[in-house]
Structures are given as structure tokens and as C-alpha cells.
Image 1: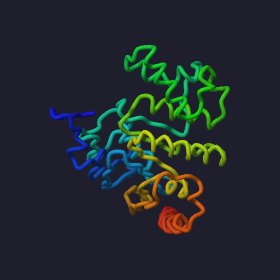
Image 2: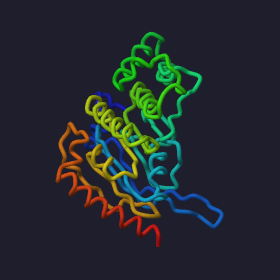
Image 3: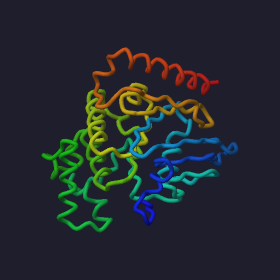
Length: 272
């Protein structure tokens, strides 16, 4: 993280904005001509904020996440994290995809230790850190298991523990629960909420599920149909701690209906 001589992060200086996206554009070359994935997108994310992103398929959600991660290059505009422009991947930005991306030949504990080993953390320290985050996600009893011995939900918990163990400034999550059954998904949503409430990392979370976005996020960014732009940002004024019980409340129901109508309009626009 970039720090000044006075020990302040750039995000603290710049009104606590962890991420600033300005006039972002991304165009892909296609067989039938250029395809505009993102157009003139502007977004600011505060330090420690949990932001969820909704929008129709193909609206540029994953492309936006990959640009923030440094995995994809932009066409124009800028993406800054802590006041520094993003050009490449960094250990300060942890990424969790729908696919678990675990090493099948390594045990759970070794999977979590991997990033720490690359960073040069000493064996005992990285093992202690890995065990700490295994306990955080409720998998202490599976430290010596292999990924093939775990359920989908357990694998995703390992992926989350590995991301947190590396102590990134930002967690970027691209539909991490999308492939799970409903029960596992609900459990992991609550686990992620508890972890975020405890760790308070800046989170950028992509989902197709309106309920999931409201349950998790402080703000929900609704993206428009192609090309990807921000249609609206909705503040979720539901206090933390949250759990699945809030889904039953009238406040949640009203927010859900409001957001769903906006998202549905974009799905209809996308079909034209």
C-alpha cells in the first residue's frame, strides 16, 4: 500500500477512496468489428466498503473486475487504487472466482500457505497464519485434506481463507457462490458477512442475485446493458450485523423490488 512520509495511505488523503475509476473504456476486437464492453464508467469505492455489482450478462461486470485486478488492460481512462494507477496484478488485490482454483495436489493448509510462501513468509509464521484463517472459515478439521475430498462450498471457503491470509487491501469476487447449491450459498453468504465484519476489507463483489447483493453490500451498483455503464447506485441502509433473517423484513422486500425493477429493465433492453 502506498504511504506518505507521514504514514498515511493515499486513500486516507484522497477522502478515504480506496478505488477511483475515471472515464473507463474497454473495447475488444471481434470478428465483426470492435465490441465496446465498458463505456465512460466512473466509480469511487471507499476504504473498507462492501460494494456489490448487478447487471445483465455481457454488461462488462467481469471485465471491470479484471481491470481493477490488473488482469485485463483498459482501452482508456484510469483505475487507481490508493492513488496509484493499476497496470498489473498485485498481492494487494485478492481475487476469488466462481471456480475454486485450488491446487489439487496440495493439502488445504498448503493451498492457503501458497501465497505467503511466494511472499517469503517463514514456514512457521505462514502455517500459523493459514491455521488462523482456516479457523475463521470453519475448516480447522480439514487442514490436511485434499481439494477432491471437499464439497464445493468447502472448496470456496478454502479459496476465501487463502485470499484473506495474503492480507490484501481489496477483495475482488466474481460470482464466488454462483455454482453452489442454495443451502451452501446461504451458509457462505453468512460466513463472508462475519469475516468482513471482523476484517473490514474493501470488497468488490459481482453477482446475478439481487437478494445476495442486498444481503451483503453497503451499496449496490447496477450496470446497464451493453455497453457497460453505471445505471444507478443504491445505498443499502440496513445495519450490520446481517443474516438471512433480514430477507423476511419489509425493508428488504421493498429494496429488492426497487432494485429488481431497475435490473429487469436492463435485461429487457439487452434483448432488443
